[in-house]
Amino acid sequence: MVSIATWNINSVRLRMPIVERFIKEQSPDVLCLQEIKCQEHQFPYEAFRSLGYEHFAVHGQKGYHGVATVAKTPLREFSRHDWQDNGEARHVGVELTEHQGMIVENVYVPAGGDEPDREVNLKFGQKLDFLERMTRWADAIDRPTLIVGDFNIAPLESDVWNHKQLLKVVSHTPIEVESLQRFMDAHGWADIGREHIKAPERYYSWWSYRAKDWKANDRGRRLDHMWASEDLAKQALRHSVHEYARDWEKPSDHVPLVTEFAL
Image 1 (cartoon, rainbow, N blue to C red):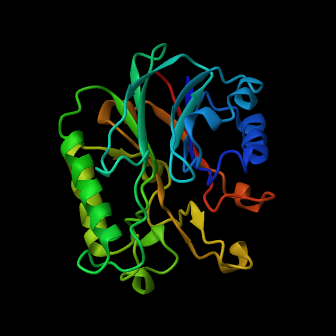
Image 2 (tube, rainbow, N blue to C red):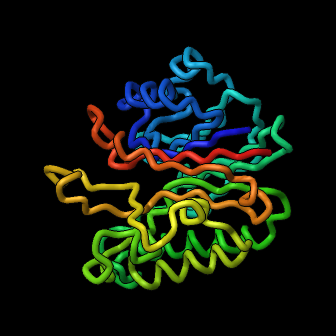
């Protein structure tokens, strides 16, 4: 058995108290964090070691972005891809050396700005290009692989609070959904979340800080994902969404997802 969690933490140093709370409650074997917002030497290694996490793959940068995978089980860093093509720290891949060599790819896809038009919004074009590079990479995968993280796209109608209102809002536009589908098709990924929480059941992982009462408004989106190679997906026993973490003190605007595998 191995349990793997993913969480856009929106500054790991600022939110270490809730990371510690989550770890004590759920104790995943592997925790993939996005948007750590620190350089590698600033990462809170000792805090994680005190919680039993001795193994690290940290790809950070000053003040923005950054991803980190921490684990109780041995790992080796496997890859760092610059799918943004500008040096931003948005990916790290690891091999779980004691779990049949399972590959875990941790990615933070760009948000894409506010205007869904690459001609007037450079960031939106960068997001689409990022997805295209990921798609070319996925076409060549030849090992059991799990890719997790903040994809910044809610593809299904039941992944957003209002499909019609969000069709022209970045993260749910048809062109983004189509780009993400091409990425899925390139490797035949299984969407673990939707394998276990069937559409059209409501499934969100993000709620804006702008809402005064996130639960009352419940204007959520499923921006965070866990996708597996076909054979690996068959070994996924349970998948859970930890919405209650959005209510913790100084929360991230995202909540953790956890999948348990029988390898």
